[in-house]
Every structure is written in structure tokens, then in C-alpha cells.
Image 1 (tube, rainbow, N blue to C red):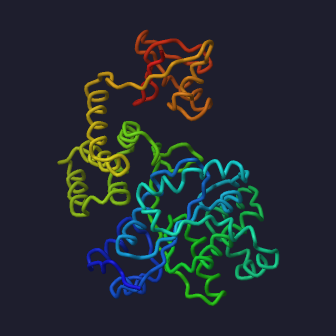
Image 2 (image 1 turned 90 degrees about the horizontal axis):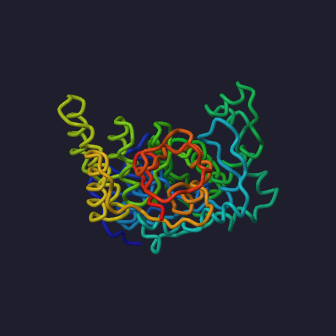
Image 3 (image 1 turned 90 degrees about the vertical axis):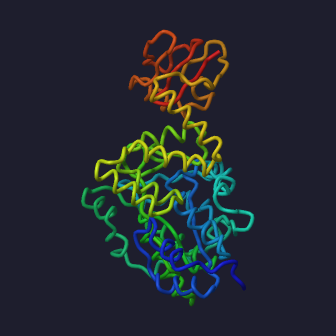
Length: 398
């Protein structure tokens, strides 16, 4: 089948190197790109949260590039693996989710991914359609390809065992399921974060056992969240695809300065020469990290909301946080009788849960702009007025 476009050597090099920690079978992959041989590229995301966060965007951008060249993109929503739970990046056992929780979380996953990837032209699949049909004998054959020592040699599992923490047998099964996905979709390449290396290698092993050629693997660098740790829905330090333009811009501006360059590389398509120039200037003290971070924020908001909203978000941020003014277009919400402040914040979409509201209040991060008072109890009765929540969110209660 013909390919839309054979990439240049520079484009191939950038595909294999930009934001990439490791490529296995990179020479084979590069040869296919040069000759126009069609590649089936697999990416899977478990719906452990209702939102796809920015940490996944690097992977989706790679998918978009392959799609632009005419290759086959396979986007798997892990509705079955999401129930089981992947502990690849966890220092403790991930609890199992209910099927109802996963179904609720994945409700808009395809449309969220569609902000970057053309999902109408991609193969979008749910892995419950094949994993739920496996028999015990099938799982036994898959498990026979691995030893327990292979699994416990992983750094995070080894640390947990050394601390005497529980490691469930369920966790040993997850790589088998992700690996079996690769057999079903006949993947030539799987893309994922460095925390997915073992799971992606399991795909290679199982494909060979099934008589398929083993997939190439592209491991991407992980991005820090808003608190400097790895971005994770479990830790609540995410920047989400679904964030409003102003919120997204503000979250990016709250990142640590050392995250600027990794973000520019992984989740934008700013030319690498421009990024290296900004990086060199900052190292020399000739460039203000704030300016580079504002460039990053503009690029990211433009990706999901367009340039017009990105410009508006930058103007609002500059006015609010650099000039210490209150934004003109504050979100408004009408409260009900006898409603708690935390409930109003949840209903308005400012926070996700009462726990979030309580944490902010107890940390002194909720204040009334009218009375200049800090509200330290999220369960206090809501009062009409304008509130500042955290560093960048405002709400007018009417």
C-alpha cells in the first residue's frame, strides 16, 4: 500500500530522537520509513482518570507524525487493562478499578485523543474485546514465556520487595495483557513512556512466540508534573488536555524552570534549533526562563484551543499575575441556598472533589477578594463575592 509521504532524513532523525530515551530496532524502523513500507504503530492508554494528561501528548504527537506520513495508527483504550491496573511507575500496589469506574473515565477518551490524532482515520480499539475472551489455558501459555525473576528484577518491584511491601500476582499478569494487545493488532512499533519498557518488551516476546516479527519499541522520556514529580493522575499533579485555555496556560507557567526544555521538546513542535538556542541562552544567563516558559504555554494552549485563545490566555495571565490585576472574564456561578463553599467550587468546575477543596482551604489557598480574608474551611457556608482559588483560578459566586 502506498505511503502519503516519505520523510526526509532530518524528519526520520527527529522522529527517532526527539523526546526519545530509547529505540529498539531503530535501524529496521528507519529503513521502513526511508522505503515507504507501511508501519502499524500501536499506542495504548488505560482510562485510570477521566482526563488524558499532557504526559501522554508526546506519544500522541508521534502518532500524528506517523499518520501524516500515511502509516497505520492503532489507538487502544485499555478498558480491560485499566481494571487490572499497571504498577510500572508505582511504588505501591495500584488498586483495581471497577468496570463502572473505567467506563465512566473512558467516556471521552477517543474525542480527547482526537484533538491531536485523526481518530477517524486511525484504528481505535478497546482491549476488552479480546482480553475478556481469553481462557485460563491461553493465559498459562502466555505466562510460560516469562519467569518470576524477569518480573521482580524491575527496579520498582525490587524496591517494594526489599521494603517488605506486598506485590500481588495480579501485577505479574499486566505485562502479558499489554503484550497480547500487540499480537492482536499485529503491531510493528509500540510507543510508550520509559516506565512501559518491560510491558513493551513483553509484546516482543509474545509476538515471537506467536510467530510474528517482534515490534520495534520507542520509549519516550517522562515529563514532570506541576509539583516536579512524574506526572500522574494518582498524584493530582497533571495538566490535562481538557483544561480550559486560561487554566492550562497558568499550570504551564507554574512548572519548575528545569521542565521548560523537556516540555518544549516533547509536547510541542517548536524547531529543535530554536529550543537549543533558548536553552543555551538560559544556561548563559542571557535569557529569562519566564519568556521561554511563556512561549511553551502559548504553544501548548494553541495545540488544544487555537492561537486566538492562546493569545487571550497570555494576556489574561500577564494582567493577573504580572500586573497583579483581577481578570475581567471571571467565571461566574450561582449558588444554591445553604450550599457549602466547597460544593460551589465543585459545581463550577474549579475543583474536582471536596478533598481538593479542603486541601486548598487548609493550605490557605482560597481567599475572598472582597473581604481580603482567607477561607480555611471548605465546608463553610458559601457567600456571594469574588474568590481567588490557588494561584490562577477565580470564581464569582452570585
